[in-house]
Image (cartoon, rainbow, N blue to C red):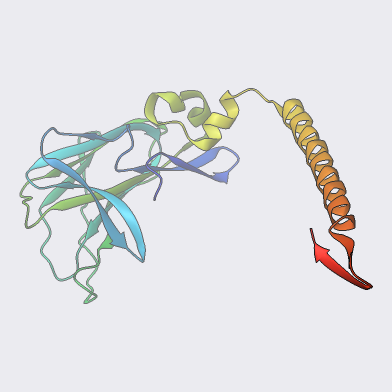
Length: 220
């Protein structure tokens, strides 16, 4: 399953590309009109959160560029969507024109902004005419931010990632090495005991008996 938390990828020593999935705690939805589901996309199962009636979704985060992605189904009509950053409108792109399988969703880059000042920005999508037969399904927000800012402020906007957990937990390398060596020694002792038992059993597996003048062997 795709990660529901932020994923970090280094672009350069001071920049970080962060993927905020549609179920990340930094993504805020209007109430009672968004539905979570799973959808097969490019041979994988992807999480999606869909508006089945008019609603809004937004993030507020430190970044200087953002791409907003959604899912859409080829040859189907899409709801009307507006996109703003800090209250200013952004151009909303149309979905790619494709005749692919209408039952397999595609990615749709709804809007984007770059070369922004590095600051807290708010991106908001407003869906004006979604319905159960014509839902709007959000995928993710991709943002570029400062690596230093992400390390200092990650707890305020993202759920813990494996990287975050690694920086918060103390190191137990010595205990791990000691435990590993102890386990190896115990395994060697067990193997030695098992070999000794097996060799003794093999030595006494056959006992000689006599039937009159003819020798015979029976398995004990």
